Length: 470
Image (tube, rainbow, N blue to C red; front, side, top):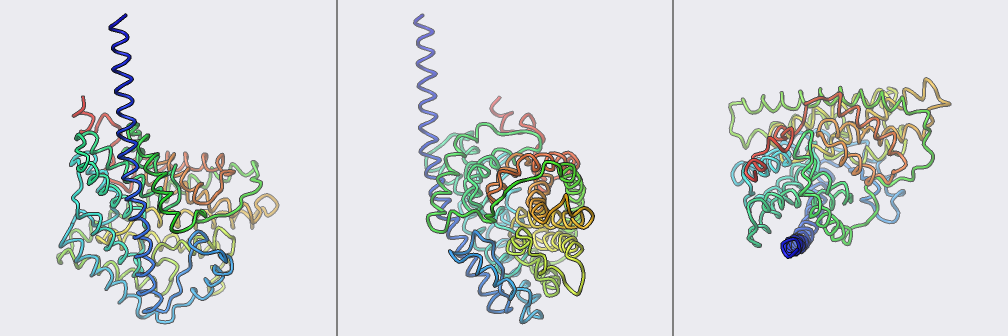
């Protein structure tokens, strides 16, 4: 009896210590990452205004969640963004941004090249820590890369920034090697939950992205705390409005087969995206020039595409917002139907992102993937509405845009659960859950083992972390 009581007390004491430890550590990580997410957002805004608005004369469209109280009125300013006053300057601007970012990355912290999430996954499984200089270098280089027009997103940078903060906090609290690795993933989830205003999705992403077919359960509890705290800090400076906030009404269950088709298409295109991304990356890796010049070359080529199609520059969130709002007139260029234009833009966004990030530019692949998937969903929805307008209404096209965002990235990142939750949080569209589940699962299955994050392992059994624990 005494032994049983002793074991129970010991177990209870361990649980209390575990919960208290991670409550404190997670709050510190969340507060710090939330503040840095805001700093990153401000620096990105300043960089975008200087490079694109001032130098190129391009009014960059924004999503609803980044606008003020007069959001709809301000969003109409996108009409000005359909024209770049100085398109000839774009290749020079993106080249300059790539050069500055390349010098920062390859001279000071080479591990900050590219998306950032892959580096965090590698650090979790193998190194166990991230150098203290990484968050600062990643923050500045990514703001310059994206702000100068590079086709990339904020998810990879904030993931590496957050993971770096997790590593620093782990050192300050003198955590064990096992807990230090958990802190990396917790910081990653907190950063994503904050900057995308999706705390639940961010926490799940930090636990799910480490594997292709598994989940790091130990990360979940502290990641939920850190992500909520980070989100609270971030929105206290900005707004709690979802990034693509829209009201979703009735969703027709009779269109479920159409979403299955969308999932299959996204899975196949996801394979193409991964193949093209790593083919272009290999091309730049084999290029006989100094590494710091490669992002400049990739940036210049992106700028050439952007001078003709500014829709592919930076995150492209403003253009994705217009697709979600079914304002397809802005996509009808030279008399070409919007359904065709959107599909072409999706392909160009794949190419531009591969050039920007594959060349070593500092930026994420989450935002471009959402845009690609959203444009594909819009295109398929418009085609279906032409064929069967009674079944596929204009609202249904909007829904397909959102589900396309979810299913495409879930397939290429091997994160079906967290991506589905994250996108639904970002769009305020929980009514779409059944349709999103069908498309996301099919995209995940069709894409197979093709993943944009090459450092992912299949399951926990393959991770050196769990071999070490065992």
